[in-house]
Amino acid sequence: MAGGIGSRFWPMSRSNRPKQFLDVLGTGKTLIQQTYERFLEIIPAENIWVVTNTQYTDLVREQLPNLTESNILPEPVGRNTAPCVAYAAFRIHQVNPKARMVVAASDHLIMNPERFRKDILLALTATKTEDIIMTLGIQPSRPDTGYGYIQYLDSPETSGSGYHKVKTFTEKPTREIALSFIQSGDFLWNSGIFIFSVKTILKAFEKFMPELHELFVGIRKQLNTPEEAPAIKSVYDRCKNISIDNGIMELAENVFVIPGHFGWSDLGTWVSLYQEYQKDYLGNAVYGKGMIYNSSNNIIRVEKKDKLVLVEGLEKYIIVDTDNVLLICKMDSEQRIKEFVGDAKKEAGENFV
Image 1 (cartoon, rainbow, N blue to C red):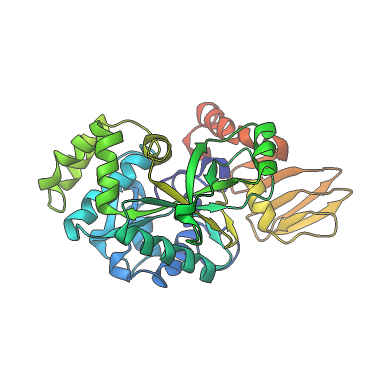
Image 2: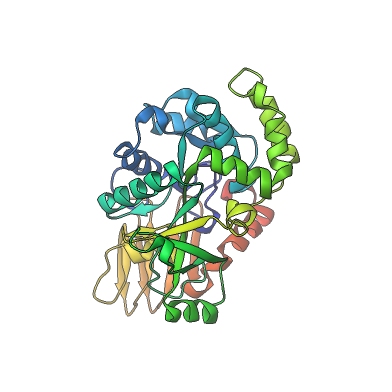
């Protein structure tokens, strides 16, 4: 999935080049390139599909030149993850009705790709013979309110299998509730990585999202033909903006979770990126030229190589300097960045978002 605009990562992530197409970690590769290469170790190249917004198809081609052209699925407008998954599932079903799918975001960080590969293969093996939906959960390291949480059950039917029955999904709780989740010991972060057979997920769409399922059934004959683009536009014009979590995962009873330990981060916010950057002895993470005085626990990113940023007397701030936007924001207020983006668009114009 590569269609998001990464607004919580503004001003580095922009509408014309969101964070999946950026080298946010300074590795020499963008996040989508890292994701593609990670899956090449698990899945044949011809079986890797990218669903993205129409305006990003050229970026996908540019950054993934070996990707099969027909495996780029352009969305005319963003409608969250449920239509995105349905689009891919219907197209893949045409190619192979017995296929299994791994759904993953294009902009996540995986520090231990070998452990990740083992968990994905475990899930693919389980979904080959079982009519189940599998997800990967992450052991929480802090009461983060920006993540969804998965509560799981220990049961005899899954004993020794490496996965557990899911009891509940909870979207972005308050800090107090998140803290209670961690203390209970039976909650995981929701990584947003799902594995299932095409048959199982299409059946779930038919049961829990019948309107969306019916829309895609109605354009089956147009898929993979010159009429696909207008047919998809007609679907997206009529379908709801809803996540796969809300539309299916929270309702289905055949969902299981594998507790993952592969060094995951969704890199969804500046604070999550701060966790990954190297820091000085006062906890400052600096990318670019920075001089720091009497300051601690800040993240400072300077895009221009010939620009120096000097900071004095700040603690727990996000400071991001780009070509035409300077952001100075308390870390505790980072959830307001989406609001700032909306205000900047309204007050300053499209060039700043």
